[in-house]
Length: 272
Image (cartoon, rainbow, N blue to C red):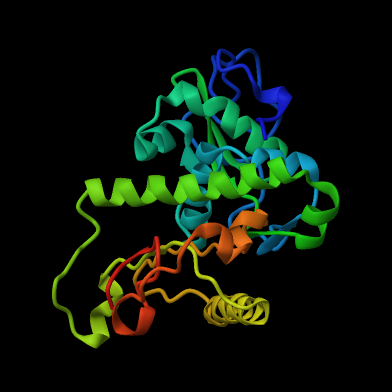
């Protein structure tokens, strides 16, 4: 999916520009922050937003927009002050001017909101907060109203955003690769499994159901103020290509992997 048509022009910043005349009453005070929208703990801001409209799906199809949204939602969940475009640019390592159209698109869809507006040396500065603490994509809506390519764009944006966060954390030295840790600290080891797993349809359904149960179980516990930040990406899909479903079309069966076949053909995973 492409970005929203109304936010294609990088050359027209949407949020920081020389002030012209007076701002609307209550929107800005020279040298002092003045709230122009609900505060982070305002009850009007929903905790979970269920996405069920095409334009918001389009807004979530860009990896940088998804990354911006994750960063802003994370700060809001921790009760910290909202971001300026300048602060976001520094955090993400992106040119400030590149963020303007993305911020505009996210604001238009209500995914971000302007929490503060003030004048700084004659320039209007706005701080952005999230319009929700988390997002859920309506499965029924995706199946009924969203084209497969558009669904794929949203999934791809999420994967790319995860990759971006991971590489940035590694580059900053914030990810450890310990060779030996005890069971109580095994969370410090990055975990990955990539590849195909051939299983009966009923087992595939059970596998997905268990993943969903696990996700719901841990999310239901809420945030732990003194906990670690565990970054998670969970994804699986079925390739409907007949050749992918027909073992005979794939040649002789591969020899079993070590430990009872856990290795499997074409898989890449971290050891236990």
